[in-house]
Length: 368
Image 1 (cartoon, rainbow, N blue to C red):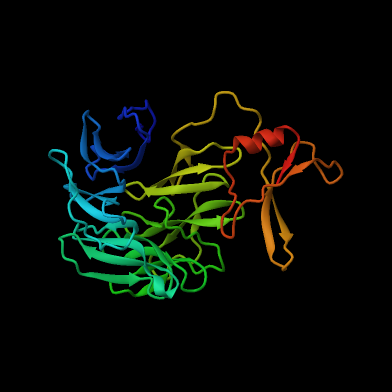
Image 2 (cartoon, rainbow, N blue to C red):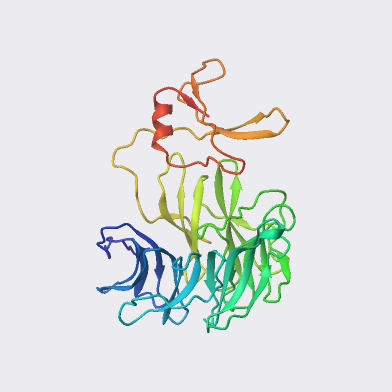
C-alpha cells in the first residue's frame, strides 16, 4: 500500500498470496522492490509487477543501487548470508550471480556507497576475540579486496554512508556503552553523542540503526528510555550540537527511521499502550502528523501511562519494570497483580499497543 504524505486515498500495489516484506523505493521514486515468499519482485506505481529472482534458500534486504540499474540483496543460496547484485531490468534470472562478500560470513545489514562502487556491510568477523561485529567495505565490481573500518576492538553496528560518501555513521561500544559515531573511510572515529552510560540504542536490526540526513548535517537515532525508545536528532559537525533535540510525537516505542529527501522531516513508526503502531511524519520545525490510522473504530478508554518501578535483586542489582494499574488502584486500594517475568539479560518489555495488557487492566488487575 502507498499513500501520499499530504493525505488522500490509499493505493494497493501488490496482490500476492504470501505476505509482502522488505520494501525498497527506487531512486527515481517510480518503483518498489519487495520480497514475498522466496521471491524478489518489483512493483511499479503506474502499473506492472515483475519477478527479478527467486530462491528457496531465502532472500532479504533488497537495496537499489544509486543509479537504479541494480538491486543488491542478501541471499543464503550458498549457506551464508551473502550480498549478490542483480539487474533491475530484463527477464527474471534463473540462477543467482556470484556474491560480492566472502563465504563463511553472514552479512547482517549493509548500505550502498553513493557512487555505487562500494558497499559497507556488517557481520561477525572476529570470533577468536569475543565475536566482534565489524563493518567492512567491499567493491561492487567483483574485486575481492576488502577493508575493515570499524569493530577491530569493539562491537560496531549499523554502518550507513554519509550522503557525500565521505565516511560513515554507525554505533559502537568502544567506551563500554554504545554511542553514535562518525567514522572516516580510513577508520578515524568521532563520537557524536557524548552521553552517559546506556542511553543510546545500538541494534543491528535494519529498522533501528542511526540514519544521516540527505543533506549530511544531521543524524537521527533511537535512545532507550525506561520502557521505550525516543527519537533523537543531532548535528553531525564536531562540537556544533552538544544537546540535540527529541523529535518523537509521544513517549512510547519508535522505530524505522527515514528522512524526507529535503531533510525537513523524519518518517517513523510509533506506538504506546494508548496508541497503535502507525506511520508518523515528524517535521523538524512544526507539529508531528499521523499518516496512517490503525486504531479500531470502537475502543475502550486507553490505560493510564505505566509507572516505572525498581526492584532490587538479591545481588543488589536494581531491576526496572513497568507497572500498569487499573482505574481506582492506589496505595490504600490494593488490587491483584499479574507479573510477567520475561527473558533477559538484555531483552526489554517496551511500551506498545498490547491487547492482552489492556484486557488484563480493564478486568481490574495490575500488570507488572
